[in-house]
Image (cartoon, rainbow, N blue to C red):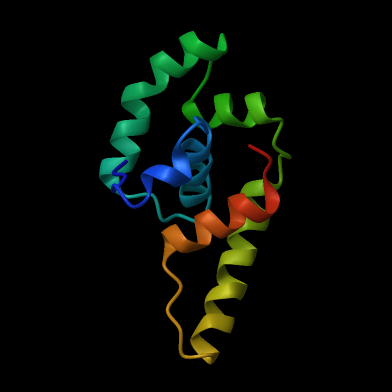
Length: 108
């Protein structure tokens, strides 16, 4: 995950924020290969920190108590919002969607 200096303030003091955004990107099938590799690489650290077993997705779901249908709902919303953005002549990037989704739907 790459955070620019302009993004640093968004993530300061919010250790789960970036993980939640990556979770949403994964749920909407927009997680890059690099991001996916990074998350697999840090899974043992997440298991240690949160004292949980499983994949990084399982750990985030359990730690935040995410509803089991969140991946499906986020995919549906991603598709719907892309159509709306397109009709308005705007491009909605996966990262922008992930940020908006987390900000509006997930307490971190």
